[in-house]
Amino acid sequence: MSVQYFIELLGGLALFLYGMEMMSGGLELVAGDRLRVVIEKMTSNFFKAILVGAFVTAIIQSSSATTVMVVGFVNAGLMTIYQAVGIIMGANIGTTVTGQLVALNVSQIAPIIAFVGFLQNTFSSKKKIKYIGQAVMGLGFLFMGMEFMSKAMEPLREYPGFITLMTKFENPILGVLAGTTITAIIQSSSASLGILQAVANQGVIPLRSSMYIVFGFNIGTCITSVLSSIGSSKNARRTALVHVLFNIIGTIIFVLVAFLIPIDQIVTSFSRDVPAAQIANLHTLFNIATSIILFPFSRKLADLSFKLIPGVDKEQEEMSLQFINKHIVKDASATFTDIRAEINRMLELINQNYKEAMALLYKFDEDIYDEIFHREQVINYLNKEISAFIIDSLGLSMNEETSSHFASYLRISRDMERIGDHSKNIADVAKLKHEEKMIFTDDAVKELDGLNNIILKMFDAIIGDIDSVGIVKQMRDSNEEIQKDVNIYRNNHMLRMRDRSCDPESGLIFEKTLTAMERISSYISNAAKFAI
Image (cartoon, rainbow, N blue to C red; front, side):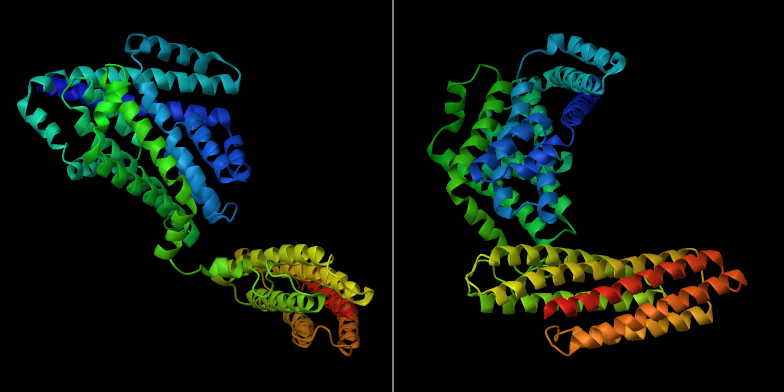
């Protein structure tokens, strides 16, 4: 094989991969974010999830892109692993469309297809038409690259060493390993399949050898979802693992079946006498059959991922109700006890956020700032879940007094969440103060310390004792003291601004902090009042 043929092979490969990327990118741009919405919303049952996975992957021509999206959704808590299994199965089916396209013998008109796409992409003023043009141009390049590779490989038909190498892939282990390695490097089973089709069209590799390589392609394509899950939640890693398990189990099944049934001969019997078409049909058969076989065991696959990756993320543990169990029906009294315990947990998180936010005003720490914002997400989650649970619980049998307590705790949960918002505002103020190198005067620091001491005592009194009758007056008196002091400190602040002992920008930061502390005091007082 001369250097010229090798150069043509590399050029054809580059054009083929570029065309595939361009086509996939254009189709994804045409679809926009609608495909993400479809994946997120249309997964109410397992069968529908498979259809969605197949449809979306057929549109964007990339099972890797679909599975990466799914891993992201699971990581964000927008989708469960059980829903993800169906999408992954469907994605494996949808990715077979690319192989079928490559198998079409349209290489002679490939330049015309590319030129039509070029005209659309270059001269159309409508974005959607331009994106379609990009996809069409990519399709043309794909076929042109396929033709270049096929011609460059013609001499291989005369090269005994290469033919001998190809026949070695009739060994299942070697074939699967080769397919897995190639796709793990390229990170696209569709691209790997296209390359194999180009080789097969020259008659240098029998379908029996191609079969095991194709099985390996399906394992190798998992590398993208595995890489995307690194550093993500355990559920995201479990989702990537399900993808790997699905294709490994499917490969094992087909390798074992191949010892009993001549799969290559069956595929040849219903395929055109074109190697590329036979490989495309083999790929389609593998993915559809694997999905059908493993369909009844889909939940078992997800369960297996939990056993192989045990434990719970810290974030997942926080983003859950620890005292309320929605699946166990209790009487009103027991339910109210659970709600109160969850509210106290929420209040402790809010107290911690407030303390750390105030500390940031004097010594800023980026890690603590990030922790405050993570904790705020947990607080928002708890407010949403507690509120929903309280509303659902109102249907329980209870008297008017108990019903009033449930309604009061609905208000308390909301007020707690608002305290969290204002604590977060103080953290934002602290970050701005740090970044702009602002300072507070000694008098301003003393005033904030005085207010802070009162609010900390309010937190100490209310945590774990929110239902105490005596606490209402204490909270009311403390809140009135805060309101009075805030008015005095605002006047003092204006005097400092007037005599220029306080920098105007620092003064604005000080005013925002006063407002946040004033609101926090009011909401704590309200929470105690509603609890009675």
